[in-house]
Length: 452
Image (cartoon, rainbow, N blue to C red; front, side, top):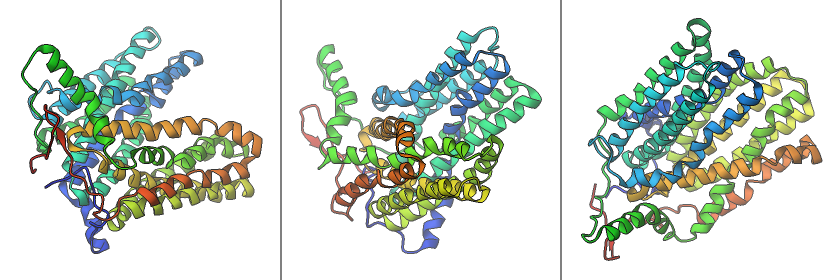
């Protein structure tokens, strides 16, 4: 039986060559293309859009409010249940049908946004930016579900690495690439180019087969009220009820919430540290672009190899410890002062260790999803991880002012240790916690899903 909901700790490759070879498998390469399409729209409604508004002489106060455009990314779990249960407009399968529909609409929305004039119609630009963000977040829901359901147990960790790699490459293209095109051919050309590049993911959905998942439970015949009640229970309550069947599920949520807190706290205050030490913005940008991009891609790919080779539990622990230790390089930077070599070392260490831990965490989140509720459960779990990083990391400025740079970054090296300890306790152990995903039938009895 194909069980995407569980990835065995003991199911690892016998040697490193076979592990690395997983990155060349067609399904894993398809995830790279989908990650590229997933990452393209983000900066088109964030930093690239901010640059466009600034060149159009839009007031800085108005530009600042455009940060709210990204709200759909944090709220995508609200409509994920609909995409898990409702049939898509195009009858091409649950994932392919929704994916193709959303990407066609996304391409059109990006083109419309690029054709606007911010100086003369700023409200329309704002509305279209929100629409692009909503469609982009919806695309992420489908892509994550497709990835989890399409890859077998061996491919989950490389898939997690590839989705991050494609995302990072796309951010470089839509960020630096978009600005470069706009400088020479105008903003519409920049946005039109990015809209066309979304077609990379569209090709994957058009050509790749639909993932095989358990058949949908039929809705009992009866009154429309009973049908609506059943649909609501299946789409909204079902994912929560299914997840809460896991032993120690509250502890799992706490561990996910805290796993990357230290990295987030350090990352938020890294640039203020560099500036306080006398680094110029061009120095920071140059080092971040050269060392940052390549090191983070290397980190996520290395994380995929490590997770496949050693399994989820040991990789969560190992990569989590390395991620925490990586923050010690900020202490070295704070003590060493204005040294470009230290800056390059600091950026490289942060991105490699953070990328490795990110791959391990994404693989773990994927392993927690039941095939019947993949989109909803993954959206919820990833939002929880993002919430922890957002809420706690926002206190970094206050803490660093009160205790100083050295003590602050020492604190970031230990703040994630409780989550790592929890993973030592609850992490997947060989085949001991393998759980077959179950669907609830209309009479309340559990049904094993049909073999894929």
